[in-house]
Image 1 (cartoon, rainbow over the protein chains, first blue to last red):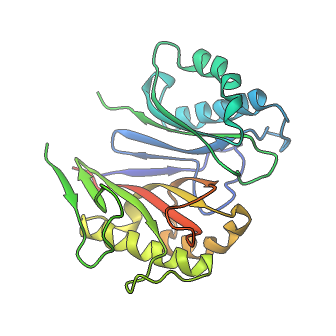
Image 2: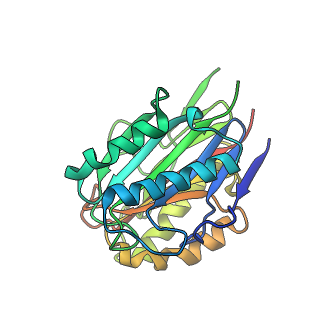
Image 3: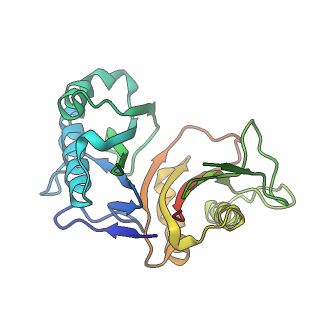
Length: 127
Length: 127
């Protein structure tokens, strides 16, 4: 039984007591990722925030040994669900033919009031 | 592969059609736990509620054969995200060096209007 917990170099320091990604058996568990750029800035636009969040998911996923086609489930939080169409192009570009199971809900707040979208994911890397 | 579904003796009856914890393969799935005391009272403070929720989580996790260092993912819901620093000390104390992946969001309501925090979790115990 192995559980590996990763703090990924170069990623935003977790805002609380957690790590970026955990590999446990055949699964990779990714923390909720948000639209904070490497320089700490945050674009206003939801699509731009989502692209940063998805890029972060990708780096952390690969750091733990996974690939985009191995993502089996995502959970998306948005502060304004009427904007959900804005994030679809990035989802399509990233997952392609490997659509994960998904839930998407509107929440009343994310950890920073400027944040509009957050995504967490689970991947399966078994055979 | 068998799936074990547990109603944990002594724990509050689920308020809907679910069980406290499920063990499936090497993974343990914990329902969202809230700050309800054994006498069914709900303390006012978020810190006190979170302590009760974590105690329930721990009880259900151990009932299913898991340990705190095997938790790989948590999802925290708060009705006021500005209170998130209040729950950190207990997260640090409970998980220690075994930080899980995590998401934390603000929601507009939990099942009881007095509730201010809820936590669900996944643990990996291997096969």
